[in-house]
Image (tube, rainbow, N blue to C red; front, top):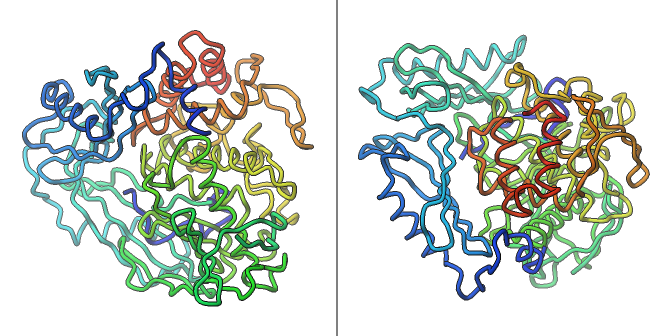
Amino acid sequence: MSRIRQNVRGARCATAGIATTATLLAGLFSPAAGAADAADRPTRALALDNAARVLADRAASLGLTSAQDASVKDVIVDQDGAQHVRYDRTYRQLPVLGGDFVLHLTPDGTYRSADRATGAAISLPSTTPKVSAPKAADGAVNALRAAEPGEALKQVTAKPQLVVDALHGAPRLAWRTNVAALDSLGNPVARAVLSDARTGARIDAWDTTETVGGEGASLYSGTVPLETTLSGSTYQLKDPTRGNTYTGDAADKMDVCGGGVCSSRVPLTLFTDDDNQWGTGTTADRSTVALDAQYGSDVTWDYFKDVHGRNGIANDGRGSFNRVHYGNNYSNAFWNDDCFCMTYGDGDGTYFGPMVGLDVAAHEMSHGVTSRTARLIYTGESGGLNEATSDIFGTLVEFYAANAQDVGDYLIGEKVVRPRLGQDALRYMDKPSKDGGSADYWSPSTANLSVHYSSGIANHFAYLLAEGSGTKTVNGVTYNSPTYNGSTVTGIGRAKLGAIWYRALTVYMTSSTNYAGARTATLNAARDLYGTGSAEYNTVAAAWSAVNVN
């Protein structure tokens, strides 16, 4: 998570994968009368059996051939028994970028519909590249150097992988090369470069990280409760109630990474304490910011579990971990899918303080949720939606926390920004252009923007959907949200925004979803939750039109 690239150069890291209560959910997921009792609902195993049968019956219409394999990535069974099974695809054992799809089945297991990242037929004359792997690596290194003008890059490494690109027009054989280096300040920089395996021509490139018991005195959130682990006579900053999520000290060091592989990771020292009273509320105690990071992880875990029924980032009960005090004056935070962890710098002390604000932590963990569901590719409009998803859930987590020291608002990263930056937040959801670069409305050039700028369109939609247009004050902050078409939008509240966006992300979006697709996905989600023609459904449509997504 970052303020936009030019303000936070460290927003990239060398390794990242592209890789409510039950009662509330029961009320939400009941689009049809007579929802099945829990005991009668299909199990995950039955949903997989049903999906396998549908795949066999409908392979041709789904574009599947004997040269392709599909592997299950996620299964969702609604309260009414409807089933949604998400797949990745390979072609002759090569990963297919844009090959992912979701099958939607009725409660009795019959086919209802499918969402595919691409509808193009995948068939190649050959899977033997004409451009060698070393040549693809050289081209990717040149692309990274071009993206970092004036930098004397060090420790440059590149790792090409042969793939099928189905995201950019007709499917073709391509090299996806993860290239990484250290800049002159020692910060990691990394890109994924996609090039044609026949001609060597560059197809696309994108950054490869998605960037921004006891108790203790945190830096930003006041005194907060913690669940810790007692080991002998020492307490560890490890939460056994939330998948053993823990926080460690990176000791101001950085990873040595490249080509998607880290040859050396920062050895972490798990934070411990003798009396289970953590932090002092100041940075003089290194455990203070660790407390902020752990607290942010705890609240985000609780939000996704209590509100959406999700048991951890990957929905498997497994915790992640936090790395704090990363690097020297490192002014960013990032989620890394490779280590399944969040990393936080201490800021430069001039423009940014330690990057462990509550909404920043929630933003980063939400990148992990996206990586385990829709896996929105981090470039073009899908990349903007990826970033916006983290901003939206980061905001909703902040409101959910109801912390008096960090009240909920529609400002992103307001706690970590120092006054000298000239603004009081990293991003603004009510009018994104207030940050100096984000887009308020969709245009044909949206896909060409940085993902931290194109995210503004979905952020603006989310604000309008929750709060509506015009001037209003929420928790002491005054907002004034305009609309592209001059319309007046009446919001439906944050709870319904969260329910609609989460269902759209986990059930309907795919890796290539763009803004038009996001409109369809959220309308489908609103239909499922509240019914076609409901006030919620109509407001989703109106809010998208208000940001020029029609």
